[in-house]
Length: 367
Length: 113
Image 1 (cartoon, rainbow over the protein chains, first blue to last red):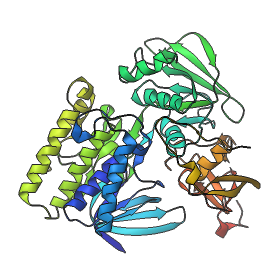
Image 2: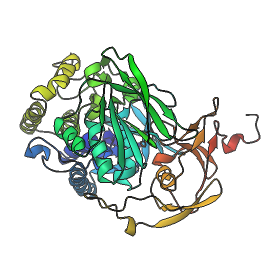
Image 3: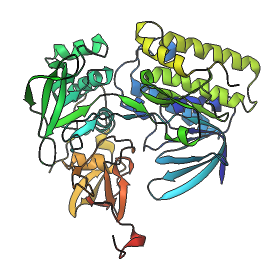
Image 4: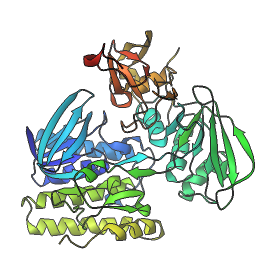
């Protein structure tokens, strides 16, 4: 059976950062990713990031991914890092700490790590409406994959469901790719995302239907239209439903952490609405209740890529430190820097929800 | 049918010109797509949106999450059922078929379904 000092599950922003941190400290690291390409959602993001220089402010998401890839290549060449794409972790066996995985669809394998970082990301939420399973109803991540990674037209005219940051950003991206937006539907009485994104879209004449929901996808085998409905403050229908012309319905109604492996490992879990689902309890170094398992990124609670990358660094640092590979000085210096960066990212009004969510799952230290 | 690609983009360069175009079949119809793109993406570019028919209610399903997590895009590829086509790379000569129902493993062919 294969072995590794540190196994990172998930090669998105959090996982790659954890792997780089661990490799930079001399650990032997293996990364598994289920996708064909590394980078998770980062490679689909064309907008420029906010924050400070340390968080790549002003740089587009996919360009940040390229910086990470360059570093990954460096450690691969040094023989400290192995990366497997198209490889899905399928189970964690707590009896012996073995991880089983699947390469492609039919090849299976096992690996026994000393320490694990779960950076498994998130999955798209679905909302109930008639025909929500019809081809043409796609998650926002899937639309981004088609158009931003593979350059394939996802549809001619898209109805966006959700006016949070993802709904707004993906609408703008669709327009950049020359695709029409039929409108943006949002059940809440106000736009959830940043005004700067909403304003760009409004200026281009796209209607944003606040206090509206989708009632039905129309079509025989594939989406040929949609029915939307105004709702009141109690989300009850008001007035007549309205038909919207579209051939694609994009769901940007939120994400939920991917946490199956954390459950199988027996990590203490808690449902935290502010973090969008069940998440593992953790200490400030992202260590879960299982002493060999760390968590980072969206799997630890839905946030954004900048924070995910810093969390990954923290998890990687702490995992290597637990193997006694790190001097105390390096550990304290890096830890202090990363926690300061996280604090900056989560400061102010925009970080309020995250801060309150984290206060429900963070413990000072495991007893 | 022509392949629906994004031609001009203000930020991204997809490098479509440098990619290798291969031929595959979907339900015995010949199609073209880029080698190593996900099968589901190649089908979508060819205008194909229905990838399987569900076992009980016989409803059409297609692309949904694109990250191998939702099982909406399961198809039969080279005789293997339940292939996550959103994370399986396209190869020349692949035989891709709409999956009807749960699919049958080669080892259990001939057994009662």
